[in-house]
Image 1: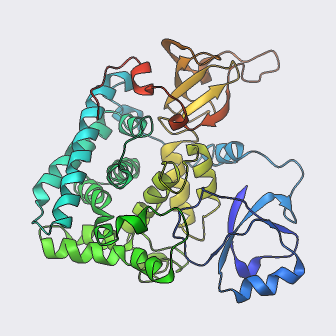
Image 2: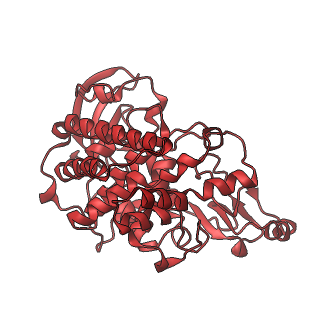
Length: 413
């Protein structure tokens, strides 16, 4: 398990995790040199100004016999009898029916994100009603089927990360808000904040934002000022609710007070700001960028689980994981049969055995799409799952248009 702890709790013998590209780039005060910590390292690390570190509890001092996998740990979380579940009565449209419509909605919100970015860069007036209309369409799609929009966002590589990230965070925020039972009005504010959360990045030069190497102190401060700049730009534009402006300003704040730009702590951060932080981190970790590769959704959720109590309110992080499931919709997975499948939906009673659509055989040859409820497959003679997921993959590593392999004809986005 990957777990985030304060440097003050770091001990000799612990193993600093080699996260490489799995942590978002601009985490402040994070010690990142992997390996086993020696006694003589402790004073140097603490003196360096680092305040947080990720450790691997499967190695070193904290290693336990019988260490379970990340997926099994998340499974135990989701099996909690008090866990909130999706209201099945609200799932009105099957995934295969909603995918074409969800694609059109996703394309529309991407176009809206592009126009907003262009208007901000050119100092042209924004049209709040246009952004509201795009978010309303996202809400309608999520009401029809919570996973369709998320599924599409993870199955295709789009050229401009900044735009897709805004659209994805919008969709995730609406999805999470609906899971929590928020009103339509609050879903609209939350979706708008997701769509606009990185508005201040328009003031960060592209060469800084996309650089592969380390940033200078001044460049880092410029990046870390973007939430405040975003709030200012949207305030000057006029027409956006205060709840949206506040969430935009707070989406990089952290539960432990080590976020930015204000260093807010705990309940000083609005619920919308805390929710956006979860959505922002999940999409950032599961998206390919110029300076880092995406990680599998199940791995990203396992890392976020280890960030509870540091970056995120523990209960809210748990709810976010329950909302998405161990294998969120759109996850590309390998079955023990060798076939590859796309996750369509979760089974609340058996989170490790979701509903999938099998699209590739063990030799990566396209096959007729086949819906399969892994929880409904009869177990073997020992009562173990006969068919199960053995690996979660990055769909962007495969030279297939996975959307078309799902049997849905989609226009290019």
